[in-house]
Amino acid sequence: MKHHEEKITQAALIIKKAHRMTAASGAGISAESGIPTFRDPGGIWDHMDMLEVGTASGFVNAIERNAETLFPLFINILDAFQYAEPNPGHMALSDMEKMGILKTIITQNVDNLHQEAGNTNVVEVHGNVFRSRCINCSHRVTVDRKIYIRELKEKIDRLMSFNLENLLSLVMICDKCGSMMRPDVVMFGEQVHDLQNAFEAARNCDVMIILGTSGVVYPAAYFPVEAKQNGAKIIVINPTVNAFVRESDIYIPMKTGEALPAILNLIRN
Ligand code: OAD
Ligand code: ZN
Image (cartoon, rainbow, N blue to C red):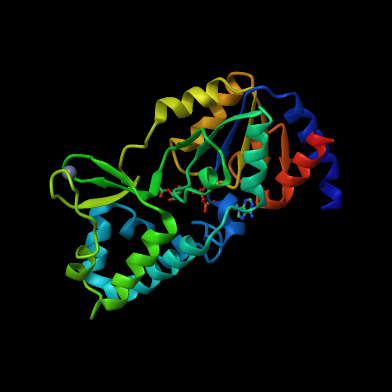
């Protein structure tokens, strides 16, 4: 970390003066909680074809053709989601909100970890996997992460084989209209959630801190551009060069779970 100390100090000076900071986070902030990212080596899109399983109809088709291969991959992801806890990066953001500096987190993550860390204003542009939505009447139900996955895994254990029919037997049924429910997440080709609030938080911030995202998925990749055009300072934390480095005033090539607590420490002292 030593050689990035100067950048950490510069970032802390900027953040300390901020009154309405917005954070924009992606899968990288949850990597240290054990949740795989999408595009890093060994990431989710290394194991599954994004174009095959990334859309709702593609997902169903892929299960129909290839359930025996895909099910074990989903169970690995379920395990990661079940055992994850907010990491020091999430916790530092929660403290920055309590200090009155951080106002909004725009996240592409669906893992609920920002809320579990204590952040109260989280704009989830890609939804939340622990919320189900009725495919008929849009009724939404929020589930407890650990209980939901434990029960789901118990049901999976009782399945005799992996096939589409058995997969469909696992889905929740809407208590308003009796139709099937699906995870309330955005798949490719679907409308992003809460876009207006996200753009507002980007437009109105004095600092945008961009955390653990490759910046290749739109419209999420526009938020930093919107922030910069409206005069915000841009800080990027990500161990790997990404689409936002060019826009940044400060680029810290570190893990968020290390850089954010170091910044917080300086802000406090
Ligand atoms: P990606 O997998 O594209 O990018 C993850 C980023 O996190 C990379 O730039 C890594 O360098 C960085 N990273 C890895 N470990 C890190 C750490 N410990 N600290 C900080 N950064 C770290 O994930 P996203 O940018 O979130 O969309 O992907 C965007 C969207 O693409 C996802 O929301 C998903 C996916 O397809 C949908 O599901 C709609
Ligand atoms: Zn319904």
